Length: 375
Image (cartoon, rainbow, N blue to C red; front, side, top):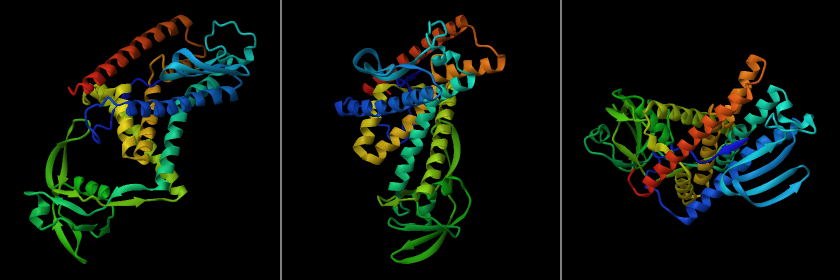
């Protein structure tokens, strides 16, 4: 079972579109982040394989020549030269292998056990994202308050008399504390008159304002109508902390929501709605990891969780060489009652490898052009 970490969909362009920077510390952070994600992914395969009674011959972080290795029991634990993936080599993973103890063979296990072993890698990445978000939500997430930092000319807020320094306390009588909630309410109600409760110099009063109907492109490049008041937030933050139970619920939902967004982004990429330049490789990962690390621990943790989800989703795609391809063959076997022939699987693996190599080359191409500032 292998994990590719060479290709990722960049959905952080909307957060930080700065050109790619070639920095040694960025590369270090990328190796640390990817190393952690690869370890968790392969550990998932390893633990479930052991639980199923499958023998594991090798557990490697990285591909290519061995740099360092130790053997414990039947398993050799390796650090390999190319830190862009990893693999777990199991007994009987190739049905043609000669096996002394068939009870330890992967290919001799039921479809159910094989499917669980395959799913354990991406599943571990999703579980890691949940754990990270759980910790982040308990520690406290900095979020913008509803204090107005800028009022733009020729927009409804300016015409209604909103001033810099005003604090928006409620919309239509419903209290509001976070700028994120305020922006969502405004964007979702273009042209509808709304009653804003404003706090200014200790006094409170109401203003009825209709957000201006504006056509904008969303993150997928699609035109949509939203409402705009013409205000920007002040640099005032709240620390939003939650108890462990609430934090866990929020973490699960956040992981689901980002999984849905990444999957939708991939679909839009195939449809041509999202530019292909959003597909990136290790240089893009290095850039983003370094940028988030410089902003602080919480942004780095958020990025690590996002990349973990990204890798889980991409590894579940039905490309033969990835976990999703192995799972697809298992599902076919479950339906047909017999495995796909070795010849057909080998052909599919070759096609999958060619597709994956093409994606990696294209991702490197995008990375180089970002490096040159041409994207």
